[in-house]
Amino acid sequence: SDQQPEFFKEIKKKYKGDFDLALEYHQKSMKIKEEAGDKLGLVDTYTTMGSFYYTFNYYKEALEYYQKAYLLANELKMPESQKASAEGLSQTYSKLGDYKRAYTYQLDFIAITDSIYKKESLKKTTQLEMQLEFERREKQQEFEQKQKDLFQQSRLKRQRIINYSLFIGLILMLLLAFVIYRSYKSKSETNKILEKQKHEVMNERDRAERLLLNILPERTAEELKKYGRATSKQFAHASVMFADFVDFTLLCEEMNPLDLIYELDAHFGEFDNIVIESVGHIEKVKTIGDSYMCAGGIPYANKSNPIDLTILGLQFQKYVKEQNELKRKDGKPEWKLRLGINTGPLITGVVGTIKFGYDIWGDTVNVASRMESSGEADKVNVSGTTYDYIKEYFDCTYRGEIPAKNKGKISMYFVNRIRPEYSEDEDGIFPNGRLISIINSM
Image (tube, rainbow, N blue to C red):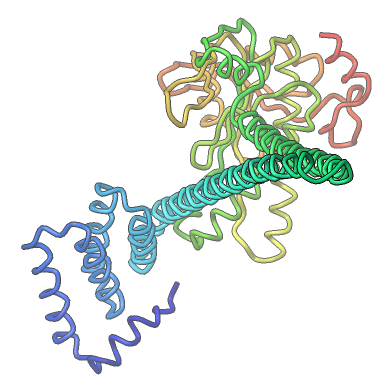
């Protein structure tokens, strides 16, 4: 943000623009804390010094102190200070024109902010559960005390039955009946509260289940819950697709970091929707920077995965082209998509013990990456292996044997469209009922 916080406007006003006097004041404060070994205080002082230099437009000096604050905050595990210094670094790098690093620290700022929010949410949930448990125990104690009081009253009244009359005994019986009714009613209300709490716990469990299934395939998630680990699995026939935006580094330098993240999220969000609505079963694996990775034939083996992924690639390119038409009208920079597909054996599994993720490995994956990097913008580039599986259903152009990094020459093809006899639309992007039936029968 170009607007200075009110705190630093007050600094300028207080020292009337006297930079040296203000600098001397802050350096004395920093020296005292360094000599005292006050690391917690130094984090705030470093952040203040960074903001001070930033306020007076000394961006390189501001960068030095924001870096100190950032590293010390990470060491001391101070999320709020990590967030403040990451934001300062992002703003300062932006001022210096280093938008790539500004973007990196902006991502860090967003991640730390999300982490703080999740911790606060967990803390509030825990406090609420403790409060409910306290209220439940308090009600239970009240109930037990009432039972004791009623028992004592019953003893006294029975004494009066002996001393006074049958009439009083009758009244005591009626009173006992009333007590029993009150007890029943109290238990009924307690059961309702317990049922409500049980329902809330079930809802939280369902929410956790949905969150886990957004991270891992269902079969892998079930295996993790049951055994605490997931075994690696081999697939003899699977297809992998990499999609990457061309010249993304230049876009990082040209665009505001927040606008860049918003645009990237919008594209990946629509890619997710296309994957969900795809004809065959396609598994999103992960995103790496501006790269989107998915695969077919996992975690459930099938024979149609080369066709499934090729259709998906055509639909990805259609969406990006439509967005670029709108960008041209608005005078905005276009986002060009390059993607590649390869077919073959691979291994799937989950690695790590914290923030674990589902991933795939094998030469098939490496060649798919080379298909993407050797492709062209707006095109679907497939290997010769994939072409052998899809050639009956798609119109393709042979590119020849193209050199690929560390792989030698590989036969490559551009997929132009679905053949007319299998296409629902004139452009050959969507399969018709005939091709869908073929896919379902594989």
